[in-house]
Image 1 (cartoon, rainbow, N blue to C red):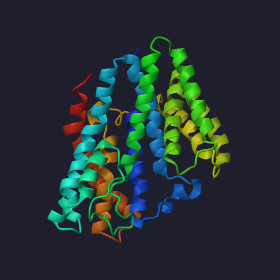
Image 2: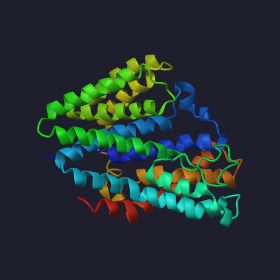
Image 3: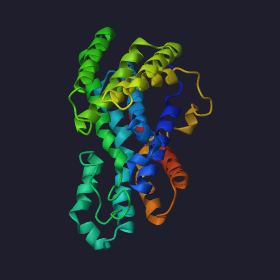
Image 4: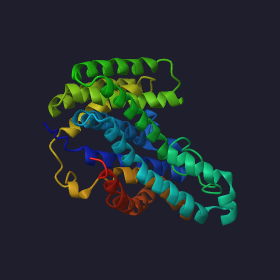
Length: 333
């Protein structure tokens, strides 16, 4: 039976727009605390959007593995979804944007070891925080070239866990759910001792959302049930704002809410396949452009910056989908 997950594509787009919106605050002022959600809850709307991205993957990836458990095809599809647009973006920034805006001469720019470190670090996702020589060094969010890329390695980590579970427990969906539930309990218990600033903490927030959504998808395939669960748990989680338990708890709520939205009646225009999925292109290409706008217009306000970012980045995401991402995805069915 083919699942009818109506609204995941528009939800992904909303999440990508939320990330761009949140970054407009930090790139304009250099202070992440300027973003309203960051002030009130300790995390920005972009942080919550990324958590929802992982919840969406927690629904889509198990569904993909259920339909076709072939691991070679699974990994080929996943890598073709992530790396073509990523590599094009990294190359465009390194070879075109970088030398154009760098304070160094072109020869000095390409001779600097930071150029090669960025090129391979960002394209491999092993060192996404590496800056480019002389690029964006004087901006409020200094030396940051493409901040959102840091989350992609955790996306691949989630694929790895899912592949192991579905590869070893193929015939019994209930056993898979029990194993994922035990894994989720391990993640939740680890929040007690993990430092909020640690990389392991970030990994576990994302994996909590991913496996929370995967478990709910396996148990709850009705919009009404998922919506009621999200509302009731959300009311409880409000009491945890400002405590260490807030982020893992809201990850579970967002996973339930994502499932509810997925099974809700479709949004006719946004769920039309001919419009494509522009969320990943927007996510990958936006930040270097956002920094460029601040470089060109240092006094720009947040809302004007967000609007200008969309005017440039949405067409880029459109081109990325229709000329690159959709074609790469069609190589493996």
